Structure formats: structure tokens, C-alpha cells
Length: 346
Image (cartoon, rainbow, N blue to C red; front, side):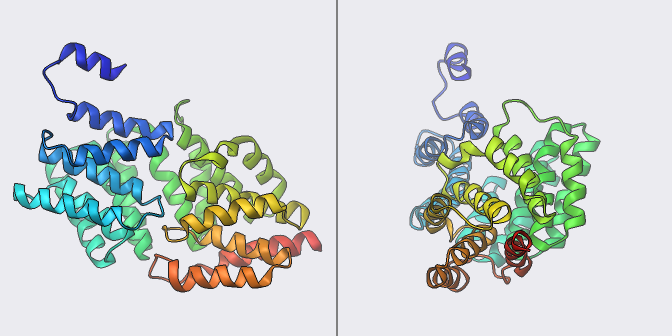
């Protein structure tokens, strides 16, 4: 509808304008990731589009590519972004974001962190509240991946303070899940519970599919950690079933990992279907960020089924060859999954 309206009001405008970029951002909720990626890459090479729009489209493409197993297209995409930036002679916020995303997922964490700080500083100087909020949240991903957890927390807290000052209450549902997930990852479970309790009080738009799934997934993780696998099972089966067919492998892996954990906690054994789904998705996403939970769930699930050799092989491959983060994988996540088996057995 928005595209049709634009064509009626401004038939002189090209297909590559700010409205098209806004549509791409909005369509993330559609979960049609492959189409968004294809269109973003098309924007990047469109000579009739402005340099800033091409770079922003390229940055969005890099975000989508960070979900994929493809290791060639991201480098080609970033090279094109750099080429366009050199032609304009400007280090814009969109270029800094692209630099941050690329180096967080495929390049140098040192360069990623430097770009993250620069991006936030530039957005502050511009006074664009929406842009600053997005940059604070996006920068926190880089800091978390790099193991700079206090910096990630500080940036997310600053983002939350921004929502309060400017009454952007719906935006809280983006920052708070990031705080809850990071708290779980680093073992600060009291903090995770506190953030989740706050998240449950927030209004989330009915059409915000990702937001609702995030609440259920965090609720399931905490229920498993609290020794309430039956409650986690309800959330996984009721609210996360659609993730089984998600176009993004790491979302499929996350849902399958939750299913494996639920079966470990409720039955002390894992179905072949759940293990096969998790292994297939894991092989496509193990080089992505934040894969420790899925990898450990697969390891514990396979060992519970007596497939120790395969379990050890996949875990070793992840830890030695595929794990992107430069800091050690969190051991407490493995221990919590192993505890599920022992608790059921006892």
C-alpha cells in the first residue's frame, strides 16, 4: 500500500528512495528474510540511487547476511560499500554502521568496536533520536560479541534512558530483550529475571511477530534454568512453532535447541526428529554469533542418545573452528543443560 501511494503522489521519484528503505526496515517483521536480502543487494548496486541510500541498503544486506552461512557475499558487499564511500569522500553514519556490522561478523573486532564508538558519537552530534537509539542498540551487539559486556550494558541502558526522555515506550521492547539475553549468556540470572519481568509489562504491537517470539523464547530459557521444563515446553510448542520453518538457519537452530532442552527436562531423552532438526540448522549457523546455547544443546542431546563420538566432534569443531566470539564459550550454559538430565533422572 505504501509503495502504491508513493507512486501516485510522486511518480517522478525513482524506486530507490527513502520510502523504499523505510519499507525494507518495516518488512523485517514479515520474516521474509530472503526477499529483503535480495532487494537490499539490488539497492546497493543501483547507480541511479544516491550513495547514502546505496550504503544503507548495503548495511541492511550485511545484517541479513550475518544470519546466513555465506562467507563470500559479505566480503563482496562490504568492498562495494567501501568503494561507494571512497567516491563520496565521507565517513557517514551509514558507512560506520556497515563497517561495524561487517567487522563484528567477519572481520576484526578491534575495528568493529572502533566503528561502534564512532557511530554512536556521530549520531549524538546529529541529534537524531531514532538514529541514536538504533545505533546504541546495534553497537551493543558488537560489544557483547567482543566480550565487552559492561559496555554493551551501558549502551543499552542509555538507549532505555532515551526512550524514557522522549516517550518512545514501544522501543523498549527492542532494548530489554537484548539485556535479558546477554544476562542469560553471562550467567547473571537475577538480572535476566528482572529484565524479563519488565519486558512482560510492556505493550508489544500485535503485528510485532519478532517481539512476541522474543518474549516466549526468553521465558522458555528462564523456565529451563529455573527447573520448570514443563512451562518451557508450553511456550516452545505454543508460541515458537513457526520458527521451525524460518528462512534463517540460526532461528531454526535456536528453536530446535529449546525443543531439545525441553525434551531433556521433561523426558530425559530426545527424539530423533528434534536432534536431526537441531543438527541440520546448527551446521548452517555454527559460524554465526551467539551459538553456544544451540551447540551445547546439540552436544547434550547427542550424548543423551549415546552418540558421544558425533557430539564430541561437533562441539570440538564449534569451539576450535567456528565460534566467532573471541572469549571462551560460557560453561554455565553447558552445565545447566546437563543438569536438566540429572534432575529428571533423580
